Every structure is written in structure tokens, then in C-alpha cells.
Image (cartoon, rainbow, N blue to C red; front, side):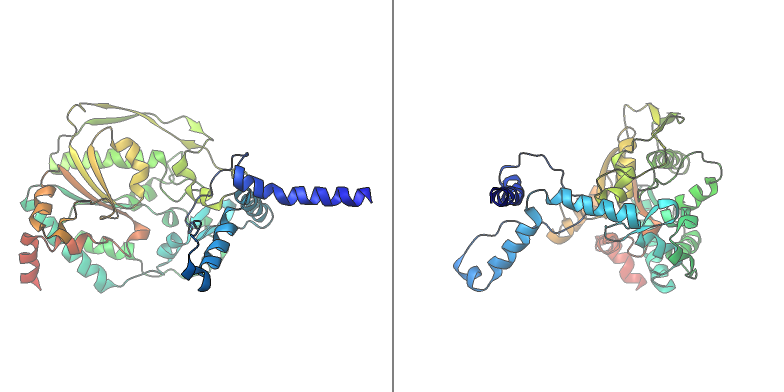
Amino acid sequence: MKSHYLFQGLLTSILLIPLLQQLLKPVPVYKLQGFYEVHTAPQLKFGTWFEKDFQIDFENYMNQNFGFRNILVRVRNQIDWDFFKKANASGVLVGKEDFLFARGYLNSYKGRDFVGDSVIESTVNRLNDIAGFFKKIRTPFLIVIAPGKGWYYPEHFPESFDKLDNQVTNYEIYLRELDDKNIHFIDFNAHFLSLKDSLDHLAFPKTGIHWSNFSSALALDSILRYSKDSFDLDVPVYKITKTDQFSNRMQKGDKDLENMMNTLIRLKNNPMIYPEFVTENGDEKPKLLMISDSFFHTMEHHTKHVFNYEFWYYYDKYWEKDPINSGSLSELEDYYQTFDLVVLMCTEAGLKTFPWGFLADMEEIPPMAKQTSVRF
């Protein structure tokens, strides 16, 4: 009988542990990373109770916030990875030698997200008009195509993608059209592919989605050189000094796909280089407007040493003044003239939606509106 009560007491204590953790939080638990809907505790109201909205919201909240849930999720994810090489993260695929890929980059390489010749031709024609606008206001305008992990590591694709035929890609048509127009652009996708056999480091980390810290530093150096040679822009000297120090400790941006998997134990990575650098003649840094996707995040650490910059994430995420919606269209035209360089950057896998809302807003600026109305 005593053993029966002892068992009940032990079982009750075990069941109470998650509740105590949820209420008192005696054990620190790391938050899960990635993208997911956060459920908050609902407020009990007369209407929500009888409509059953409260019950549904409360159940979702409890399922997401019971004690030690995040640890249990990581345990499950670790088991799936160790025994089945399964990545429990939306859109993350496991390739050969445990290289991680975002599905969109493989689709882009295979041409499965191709938007069509006519769409790209139209987009580049409009970009050509915009380049003419920036030339008139004497503000250098540069398009940058950042590399894609799919193009760089097709040999590490999952076997299921090896069986798919290669089709025409957005990247290939954009290159063709940009070459035909009077637009300044840099193609880092081709650049890093040309260096692949000679580089002694990974241009892309094994468990990350973006270019490596070192690769972004090399790209920034190229942008500086291009700006000086093509636009006669007075830029600081940027020198990468140490490139031989490898580290097994990945910085945050070099393991972003791994972070989304939320495992208990860090995955095995190849050593990465985190370069050291010096700048000269940087007392008066030129002013940069960087309109870019998330690939600029990796470069941002280096950029702040050579530019005073603003970063418009996917164009409109940090444009707080919003002159388009307020009706002050001339304000945006004047604002562009305060910059020494405007860069529009996108990874090749993002070209299917490039350049986001930038085109439509630019064509609403009075000088551009007159120009496009004549053309159309």
C-alpha cells in the first residue's frame, strides 16, 4: 500500500513540474528560433466564452507555453536529426554531407520559380529609366546580384533535386537584359563561382543561408573599388589584413538555418574565416543608401566602417517617412539626392520578386512619372 501511495505521489510531482516551471520559471529556458505565430494569453469576455473563441485561444496559448516545452521541442528535433537526418524547420532541406539549404535557393537554381522573359524584360526596362533618373540628379546607382547557395553548391543538393531537369532561370535572363542596358551592376554570383576552386574557405557556411562573413567582406571591397573606378566616388581604403584564422565557433549569421532547426546540440560545421581589417582615410565617410534583402545583414558589420548608411530592408521596411502615401512625392526625390551612392542588392534566389515596391514608388516621383507616361 505504501508503495502505491509513493508511486502516486511521485507521478503527481512529475506532472506538476511543467506547471511549476510555467508559473515560477526556476529553470532558464532558451526561446525557440525561427518563424512561428506567438500565442498570448487571451482575456475572458462574455462574448468570446460563448463563441468558444476564448477556449480555442487559451488552448493554443497553453500548448505553446507549458513548462519546459521548448526543451522538449529541441529533444524531439535532435532525435529526428540524429536518427533520420530530418530538419524540423519550414523550407529547410538536408543535402549531401549534411549541407543545409533553403528550398527557394534550389528551386531558383533549377528554374522552377521562373517568372518569364517578358516580366524580366519589363522590369529591367523600368530599372533602366530609374538609372537615368539617378544620373540626372547626379547620384550613382548600382545594382548588385548577391550569390545563391544553390548555384554555389549544386554537388551537395539532396538526391531528389538531382533528378530534376535544369530550366531557364530568372538569374540568366536578368544577366542578359542588364548587359543590354546602360545600368551599372555587379554580378557576385558569377564572381564567387569563378573563385570557387581557388578559395581556401567556404563562400557559404554549411548550415547557413547567406554568404559567409569573409565573402561579404570581399564583396564590400569590390563595391568600394567599383564605386571609385566607375563613379569617381571618394571612398575610404578598406584592407582585409588577416584571412588565415579559422574558427569552429560559428557566428550567428553563419548558422541561421541551423538555428531554425532548434536542436539541443550544435551541428557539425566546417571551420569558417572571420577576417580582420583596417580602414584608412575614413574620417569623412560617404553616405550610402542600401536597398537590399537579408544578404546585407552579413555585410553590415563591415559597411559601418566605410559608409554612413541607411538600410531599407526589402525597400519599404524602414522607410518611416513614407512620402508616397503622404503625397509628398517631391520629398523622396530630394531625399535621394542626399546620398553619395544608392545600391539595390538582391540574391539571385530573390529575383522572382525583385525589386519589391521600389519600381512602383520610383515611378510616382514627378520626374519619373512624366518619363514613364511618355514611354507607355
